[in-house]
Length: 316
Image 1: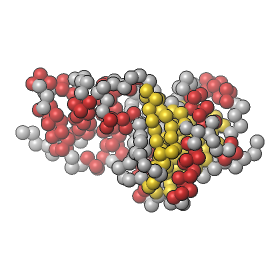
Image 2: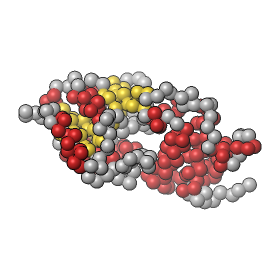
Image 3: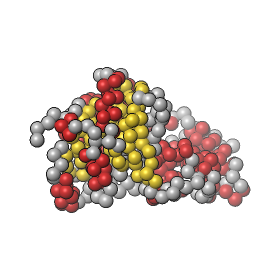
Image 4: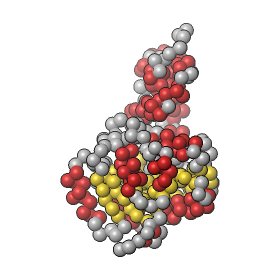
């Protein structure tokens, strides 16, 4: 079959063969004519032979290409996709996400609406709850689960409106011309290390070069929230790794904040009952969403402060 696609839907995966077929099925069900888009699966799993065997399940999908990327790391898989897709636009979908039928159409419409300066389109990401949402989960914590809904219509995104890798699209040239996804950031292997910010760093480079970042709410995907993430311990871990990711992306941003970080920890602990005014205070489970959100802030401050050695802080 000969075709000249406009956009490539990329699904990077690592040892999640139970979830991947659903993501692929949603990519094949787009309302865009098949001749106008490719599907590229980049398998970054640990077993090449298993990946090759699994790929045969999709051999009859005319516009799907399945490749194996041996170098571990999500950024490596995404960079492989950017180099190989061969289309003007590239759209990334997580392997545990389900794209709405109009996902790719909405992305292309946003790029067309805002012209050649438009370099990035982020879309809406709604949760598929793998378990009941816990009462302590504050709305402000949903971003850690890649839930995004900024409302309104398609527009140039405000600097405060961030996107996530579960649903983000680029002019492919913008990735290639701005240093690709940083391989020292982002998830790798089993995901035990929750490094992130690879998309943020790339988008900052694109914006600094004059590219427009767009938000298109009609570019919708639903994203699985794994029950393993709906625990206090996972969120504490996620917050510590977020501070680490922020530090690795730009160590200088913390240069003058050691005192601020220290005060954040101290103020949180001072508000706790006497028996919780030690390290115990940041390990206490609670059903109060405001209190847990404050606790997570203290964990972020503690991690950031330790990375800086709390240099310059005067204890009182």
